[in-house]
Amino acid sequence: MLLALIFLVAVAKASGVWAKVAAAAGALLLLSGLYNFMTRMPGAPAGWHIVIGVKILAGLHAITLAFLIVFGADAVRIARWRKSALGSAFFASGIGVYYLITRGVN
Image 1 (spheres, rainbow, N blue to C red):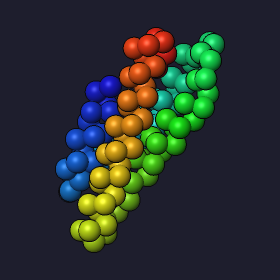
Image 2 (image 1 turned 90 degrees about the vertical axis):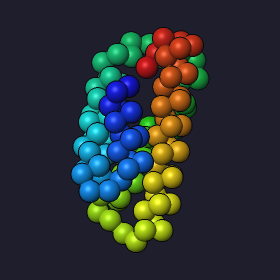
Image 3 (image 1 turned 135 degrees about the vertical axis):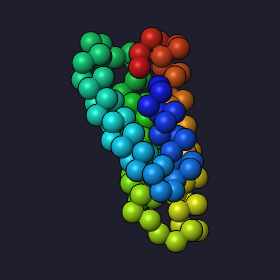
Image 4 (image 1 turned 90 degrees about the horizontal axis):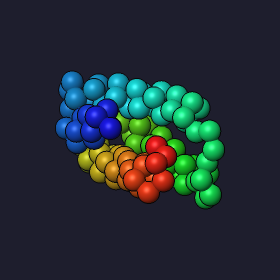
């Protein structure tokens, strides 16, 4: 969860060093998420598969936009990407928190 917070702060700042921090945190989030997905799920609750698919797509969207912000563009495009990345990251984190609280599944 700390890594997700670092990612959100870095995307919100998204300039200079913070953009590189966002890209690194996004890559680490992807790797840790894949590891947790493969090792910590002995049995999935009902309806979980479609929700995890949406969570993965939202997370990949946020990470992709973080990488695009690192490479840079005009200010208007970066502002739009930043808002979209933050929205997707909050949405994906919200799904994870919901399942963690209600079902004990992360």
